Length: 115
Image 1 (tube, rainbow, N blue to C red):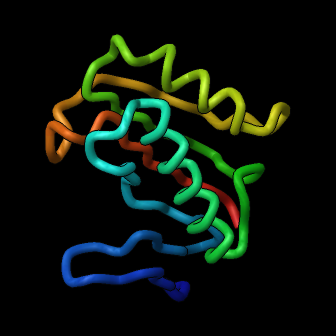
Image 2 (cartoon, rainbow, N blue to C red):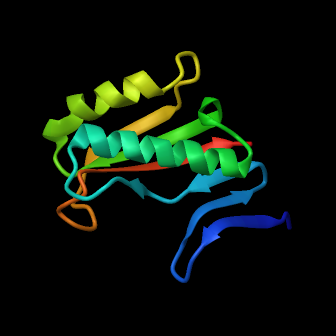
């Protein structure tokens, strides 16, 4: 069995897990109460940081799963996403509406990337 590396492993979860050349990030959320755009920017900065710590970057993202507390915020989130995602390296992506951990969270992003 290949080694498993955990990044920022806490009592409940790790922020990232690396196995067989794939990096799995936990759901990333922004500052509670901030706008959708600001939370999205914060989330994507966290994704960049965690991927760098794992030894990869956003050009290697395979899949992104995005949860919005209100799907009406889709365009606002996409404006930030579109400015961040590297053209020619867009991952497979799904976006849906979900009740998040607290009403102050408006967006959560889950990413899987190759090393």
